[in-house]
Every structure is written in structure tokens, then in C-alpha cells.
Amino acid sequence: MDWWVGLLVGLLQGVLEWLPVSSSGQSFLFLMGFFPVSIAEALRVGVFLHFGTLLAVLVKFRGDWFKIFVELFNRRLTGLTRFLVLASFVSLFFGGLIYLSVYEAIAALAGELASLLVGLLLVLSGFSLYVSHKRYGEKFTHDLGWFEALVVGWVQGLSVLPGISRSAVTVSSLLLSDLKPSEALKTSFLLSAPAVLGFISAEVFLHGLPADPDFLLSATLASFVTGYYSMEALMRFAEKMRFDLFCILFGLIIALASGLGLLI
Image (tube, rainbow, N blue to C red):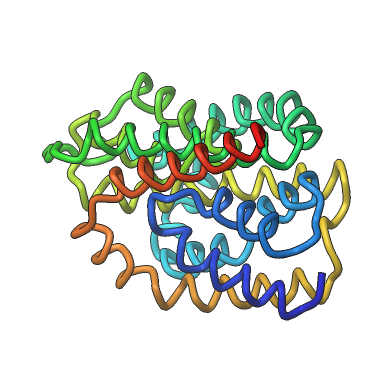
């Protein structure tokens, strides 16, 4: 794939990462729909595309990350750091199991079947948003205990699957734990960094780089710049939109179109 394709999918990733619509699922559908790539390549590129938005999170919340690293170094963990560490370990363990056992099976599917799966998982993401969109808790992340960390880490691990929106399932589970909406969004951002770093490292270690270096560089730069500068604006936009309905309707459209393709 050429550098300009990386630029396009990087821009897509930078915008959609902050919205609960599964950026990996959308990039998968985009690559499969418009470019001659295999399912396996589309899946692997979708993992690496998160590197640029990972850098955006690290830079945007550099003050929070500095405090977290100081606490880890001094081994004096506050409630927020303790929650992030436990939830991240659960995400990496459970998500790693899915990655090692399920990804190869998805890559072996026919194109229409893979798109059908992504559509159905988008519907599931939409339902997770629907059950929590009217929750307005008053807790902060440091008020949450080990059980909430296990649940949030588990659902974030599920987002390894293309079509499961990481932001949707983590924010939904945090809201259902009675967290303040603004606190849930920030915590979801912070949770993304160790999970994304772990899965990208595993992908590179197991299979090497998923595409041409020029493609990866342009995709990373595009997703970093777009993700960094659009983060706050898109989250304000997200608060006014019913993305639960969008995920459900868009997922149903993809699933129905793919189902018809299998029948024809």
C-alpha cells in the first residue's frame, strides 16, 4: 500500500478513535472496500493504526502520565494509578488470549463473512452505549475498587475484535459504575495507552511490521496530528450525538449487506 493510502486511513483513525464507533472496524471496512488487501493485512494494519493516536494521548495527558510514572517508580499508588494498572493487566491478558486464538480464525474468513462479523459487533457496541447513555454518576476513578477494574479491563480486552468500540465499551462500563461522565471519558483515554502499546508490541514481535514503512509513517503522522488536534472538539461533538443508535443502525446495514452478499 502506498503512502497516500496510509495518509487516508491515518486521518480516518485520528478522527474516529475518539468516537464510540470502533475505529479499527471502520478502517477494516475501508481497506477491504476500496483497496485490494487481504483480511489478515487489514486486521494487522488496523492494530498498528492506533500508534499515532497512542502518541496523541501520551502528549495530551503528559501531566497525568508524569504523575502516574512517579507513583509507579516510588511504589506508592493512588486510587487512579492502582485502577489503571489492574485494569490494564486484565486487558492485556484477556485481549491477548483473544488476539492469539481468534484473530487467525477471523483472518481465515471470507470477505463477506468478516464484514458480517464487524457489523454484528458494531451493533453490540451500540447496545453497550444504549444501556448507559442516561447514567450520570458522581464518582471519581479513585473511588472505584478492584471489581470495577476487573470488569473495565475485561471489556477493553474485547475491543481487540474489529467492530467492538474500545471507547464505547469502556465508557459504558465506567458510567454503569456511577462514574462522572467527564471522568469516564478521561479514564477511557488513559486506559487506551498501555493496552494499545501492548497489542502493537505483540503484533510487531509475532509478525513484524504489517505494511510498507512509508505507509506506516504517513499513517502514524496523520493519525497523531489529527487525533491530537481533534480530541476535545470531537468529544464535545460526541456528547451531543446518539452514537448508540449510529452503531446499531450502521452495524445492521453492514451486516445485512454482507448477508445478502453471501446469499447472492
